[in-house]
Length: 434
Image (cartoon, rainbow, N blue to C red):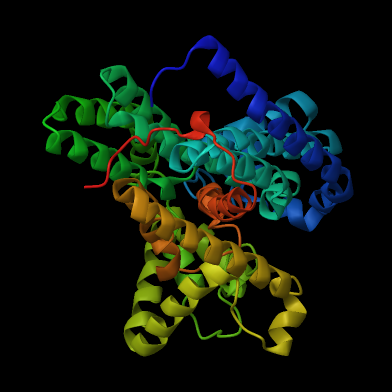
């Protein structure tokens, strides 16, 4: 990504600043209608990030994720510490702290307009960038999860989109600092939500491979990125080892997630009745065994069930993949009674997935290496959820990439209807088709 002059850079600010302001205004306007739901005692008692943040503020350390049972690694640290800071300033579980938490998430979601806009400009042109930036400002998932989801989703969405955009510059970068910064931000993202480790290293390695192929230095840059990421993640890994006496890279909950997603319950994509938040028996078992042993035991139980129901498991993996990309799980009346928003979700998810696929095909014909980067994310990011269980918010961190690809469709349509020479729109691609 080449350097731009002051005037061009300022014009870009003028392009995306109204998008960010509008996106933030919309999300903040929605919060007053939704924040009271978070003040329900039941919700607060089962808010994993909130419980650990409350424990930090109370002086009990990073602990007590399900109950007052001691140290935990079920949730990663970055968003917990942000919440703890809000609780310290505005009080724990107060209306003001809840509104502040949702406002912060709304800001993260609104700021995502910037890398979304810039990425669409690189992939297509300025017209598509405007569609992508404004599309994200009004995107229903972006609005909802910004204004009503006190979770790490909006932050990791922003970070992953920035990292995807940053990775595009690494192939031509002459500065090791660019690679080191990429690794450091990747480490922050991993400590926010470790699922990003399924794609961010691959994006870095892809850039390194392209450099090697073009006979540019690549070993030192890749090592710089690895060192940056390791420097951020290592202290948390050491903390987990010192407390739990076993290697827990970032979070410990995969065994439980695999277990609750693979039971005899076929109505839903997940059986929450086996979660310690919803089962006194499971909570007692968690307290008795301790967190590491409990998670290992849940993974053993899940493995036994999967081995005994292999065809069912394969069927569920395929259903989960379909659900992640289309929102469709079942049309059973009992299921829809519990999930009344599934029908509009099916429409939105399927429509955006279809538009993104068309946009990806278009990009594939113009810049295959760039399209491959999108494929890497789309293939590997949701893979763990296919194997364990999905939730509606699990795919949201890659929504900006979906919006970027989808933006090329209306941009091209209106370009054909009112063709105008736009020499300044042609943004050179960062790669060329091989």
